Amino acid sequence: MKNLIAANWKMNPNSQKEAKEIFFAIVGPASGWDGVEVVICPPNIYLPVLKNIAMSDVALKLGAQNIYFEDKGAFTGEISVAMLTDLGVEYVIIGHSERRKYFGETDETVNKKIKMALASGLKIIFCVGETAGERDAGKKNEVLERQLKIGLLDIENLKLKIENLAIAYEPVWAIGTGNNCSVEETSASIKIIKEKLALSEVEGQVRVLYGGSVKSENSGAYIKEAGVNGLLVGGASLNAEEFVKIVKSAE
Ligand code: PGA
Image (cartoon, rainbow, N blue to C red; front, side, top):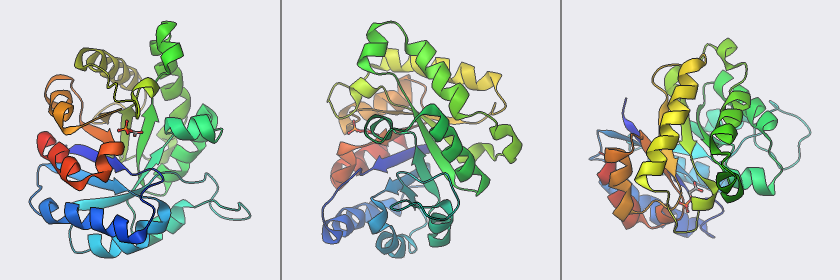
């Protein structure tokens, strides 16, 4: 399976013009990318316009940063999986630590969203990771186990296509801080995650990504030395030139 490099633009940039500029600067080089799968996750409002551009280039895929766990109805401000699949969006990030921290997401709501997304054929990037406090208290393994166990509860009933599930290990203390997790520590966490997955129903080719202050200077080492199958890139993905370098390091 190809390495997966996903760009999480978060709540950026501020205009459609800038979104198109960044995207166009990635579309050019993307035509030569064979060995890697690349997904751009912009704010939802930019998905339709970027989709029109992406249509002409199969190497780039689009993803959302969140969904709601109900299929439709009176849920003001929310986005459903049907709206995304109707648009041809293939991926969604679920359980990002910023959603857990600022928007009250719990392991249980994350599980509902994962089930909703997988049941409708969306591919997911499921984020897990410990906070600085949990790491300092020696609770990293426990936290990862809990997030994986509850997050993936009952997914075996969904006739899951294993390639539709990717896990992103994102230590919260490494996100947006410039303090990326060392290759050694990442490698140990990836091992824990893979072991945990092997015990559950989703054994097999689940891609495990790393995210947290990824830059072109450190990206290659994660792919080559930490045993990851891809990267989830935040801040650095808004700089097209930098993002293209990161993708190249994973090819
Ligand atoms: P960062 O964000 O690369 O800016 O640390 C990663 C993420 O939040 O997915």
